[in-house]
Each structure stands twice: as C-alpha cells, then as structure tokens.
Image (cartoon, rainbow, N blue to C red; front, side):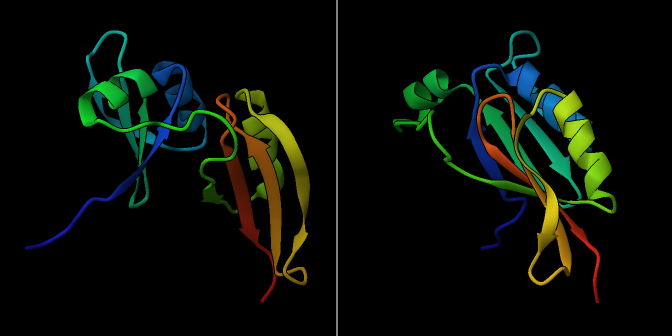
Length: 129
C-alpha cells in the first residue's frame, strides 16, 4: 500500500470565487466537478494540494458535518516577497488580519490575511539566516 497526493480541503461558499483568490497566490487548478457551477475545485502549489468544496454536497456525499465558521484551518504560503504577496492578497479580495511583521526573532517576515471565506492565510518570507 502506498499513500500519495494528499490535499487539504476548505469548505467555501463559492468554489469559483475561492479558486480565483488562490489562483492569485500562485495555485493552479487541476480538477473541477462539474465543469459549470462546480461543487469542488482542486488546485496545487508546489507539491501542496488544496481542495475547495461546497459544504452541502460534501455533507450529503460523505456523511460529514462541515464546519463553515471560525478559523477552521490556516493555509501557509511561503514567498520571496511578503510585502508584495500581502498587497496582492488584499487586491485579490483577502481581508486584512495582520500586516507584514518580523517573526521568530526577525528570521521571518509574516503577514496574516483571511480569504473570502474567512480562512486564515499566512504569508511567510525567510529574511534572516
């Protein structure tokens, strides 16, 4: 037995809106179902898979109870320019949470935003040794 191609799934109100947001952060769409008015879109950045799914169909199909409010998960995206990534995320529809600031003794620059569905997104740049 072998495991492969793991992904985190975020429950969202609008798959296409969420995919447009994450596309602005560099994610590439790899799958959607159905083609029109999708209930799930899968994306990838580097080796990280991200699923964006409507909670109702997921609950009905998989017998789960999706949590749709609060900080259910946090997506971390590494970047070579935290300031530019922060501005790009805000321009793509993110809500501001915390502007870029030094973290862990100044070795990192970190910003926190929330995607259009309220999921925290951490933008991180390595700046020190």
